Image (tube, rainbow, N blue to C red; front, side):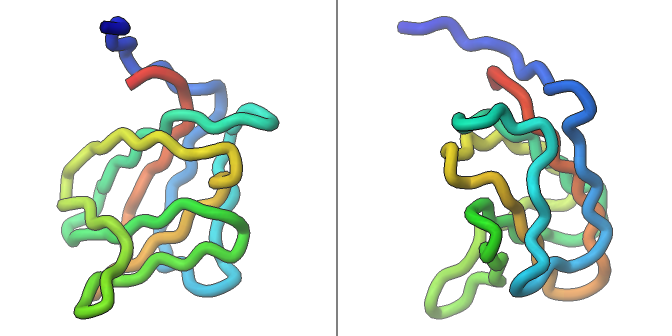
Length: 109
């Protein structure tokens, strides 16, 4: 069984998102190594649940309903994700209010 490595952030690799991203407004992740995927730390700094989606430049985050949607992150939660080499963009949605999310790329986790 491989050892679990602690998360180590890349240099200058944190985005702070304070507005809902919609179609065509996905943000490029900071500090992603060229030609590879990476680990991502997502911290919900806000008071409401946020919905996050990683993907290409046209990625859109959606609130889950009868047809499914993006993954939710509870207020105050920190989660770690593995993104593929084609997933260098992130979109965020909220049901109400303004999100406050920090997204940091790195290795381990």
